[in-house]
View 1 (cartoon, rainbow, N blue to C red):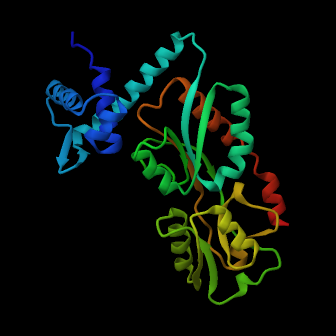
View 2 (cartoon, rainbow, N blue to C red):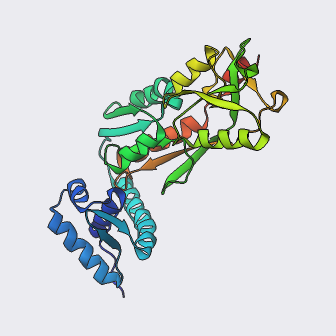
Length: 296
């Protein structure tokens, strides 16, 4: 019978894949760099294929490495679930959690406050910033879990919510009638901006980027102040905003996708408890009230 793979080797392999560095991976798994290198050598010998490509200081996955990475993650998750099942200890520890400011207003006061009441021994350190910054921070090892709003283009983003995207303007404002139409949006790396601009170009709508910010609160302020027309997910709509659509000559937008990403170490225990709480709570967020108010 074939002997099972070494989970410790798989953990080190996934850590390297996460951050693209042997040095950083060694820090994450609390081993020396030489010990991690030996683990990868033995794993490659065991599987009979190179798993990593080294180019100077950067490390990337080979085709075989990508196949293994997906399966190794599943094994690490299953292992964590088994350990949790037989564990009798109280859940305690700290989690580094990142959330886009698009959702921080709804997520922090309601969802995280209820989590802290039911799990007082788990400390959650929260960072709010743009999705692209959170994903970069995840790769750099700054976070254990992040919610991000760029769908599931990233590896191992667990899609758990979709929302309608709406064009919005200030009630009674003049931004919509301006030529060209002033637009408030995120930075050039924002996928929502890319999709909105492409949609406007398709219908030949004249516009200009009048206000740029990676901060969702700043975008909402620009809209409410009648500085520009914006586009927001349903749960981010606020009183004082007017929902716009095809009747005003604006194209339909693709739905927003919200996903959760974990570090390869962030399975089981305190991580699963927080991840499950966020997915369940945020998936059940009631957006009908903000939408009704915004559509008045």
